[in-house]
Image (cartoon, rainbow, N blue to C red; front, side, top):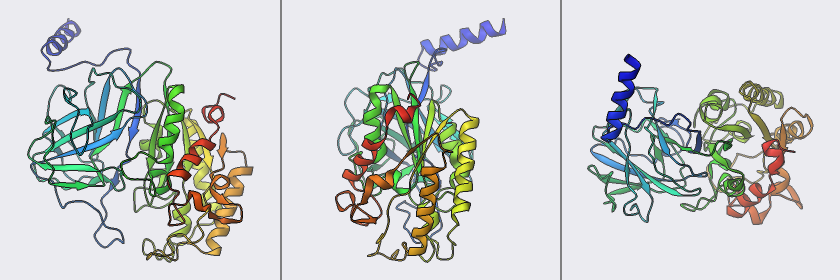
Amino acid sequence: MRRFLAVMVIGWLATFGVYAAPRDNAHWVTTWTASPEARWDGDFALPLNLPFHLWDQTVRQVVRVSLGGKQTRVVLSNAYGDAPLVIGAAHMALAGHEGAVVADSDHALTFAGQSAISIPPGAFVVSDPVAWKIDASSDLAVSLYLPEPTPPATFHWDARQTAYVGAGNQTADAAFKTDATMTTRVFLSAVLVDADAHASAVATLGDSITDGAGASMDRNTRWPDFLAQRLRQHDVAVVNAGISGARLLRNKMGDNALARFGRDVLHQPGVRTAIVMIGINDISWLDTPLGPHDATPSPEQLIAGYRQLIAQAHLHDVRVVGATLTPFEGALIDSPMKHYYSADKERVRQAVNRWIRQNGEFDAVVDFDAVLRDPAHPQRLLPAYDSGDHLHPGDAGNKAMADAIDVPGLLGKQ
């Protein structure tokens, strides 16, 4: 009797637009992510690119989904907040230009039927499903209204996408009155779609090379973006779990890879394969302003970290593909990071790459080093693929990386 009454109540609420119960046969797949990271202290070498707080303001953030679906949900994160995060209203629409959205595409988001939500410290919330069919490679605008003074304690530093900030509650407005812009993301961590039953996702765990540093702003030209274009015909989403400055074994710009692998990769709905390319910042931060005293780990220490990622992935029946670390001689030489490269650091990279190629512990290997290196000077990036800082590939290099991936091997269909 109680179950009958509960079903009747949910049906009545759904009828009047108060609550939409998830479909029993929905197949939720993560189609986009921005891995959360903790706001760092002001004495760190890199600027935050964040306001002190957001108060009675709307933030409109644009994301490109990789795979479409019949229903859509968003995930909001207060992972690093020390107080509840109050969202006064949230909307989703097709993105237009300069912060605007496409007319008549707006959808209000609810959380257990409510338009506002208070997210406890350390928690995340998933919105109710929106019965809205979106296509692969659609650009969505997610608007969050923050009615209270809200320090952006949980953010993603390098969005490679402009976000728009305006006064008051503009979540439902087609045109957006912009007071400021940001190149960071705040609180928005994932978009999920109700995809076809056989659809799945590939997650890319990495650092700034995966996050997109060196890619053109607002152009979706990171290497995972190009891979998403290739995998769309296979009904496979690509979710980017890169964090600029991230490391395999240490925290600072994001948690270490072993700590965040579950949250950012293994627990994402639909993920069946992970590509791992991380470790160059572990090798190179010594003698730089980012980690002047952070000793370079030995190849054996890095390999032990990779083995832990492999073990974690296999416990979840997730394939894990190892990617070689790319060339970096001359990296950041014209910046305060001019000691990022050294011959000793290069020897560690070469030893790690030999293990990735030869050991056979990954389910498959993609040799990004071979793709991007200059044949005439293998310790350096090929100039045509270099963004200019000798560390991060540009758009052409990102496309070459994605094109080099063997799709049957990636998906385990050989």
